[in-house]
Image (cartoon, rainbow, N blue to C red; front, side, top):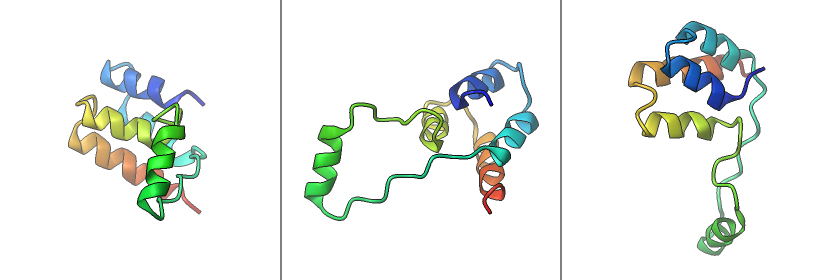
Length: 88
């Protein structure tokens, strides 16, 4: 499987289709998200100890692409639906 960032770049450049990326997202094994912080101290410690704010090949890369305008609303919703449809 290709890296999430690479797939999103291909989609943005028109080199792949939303459907093809959605199929990848539906079958991809996504990394488990970090559980939420239980206190302010926990949150602060995580911020200080996290050298890489976005975990490669995580959904955070998709969120970053959406926030930066690389994905539009329709694309984001389609990819989210594909990701959640792949859960067992």
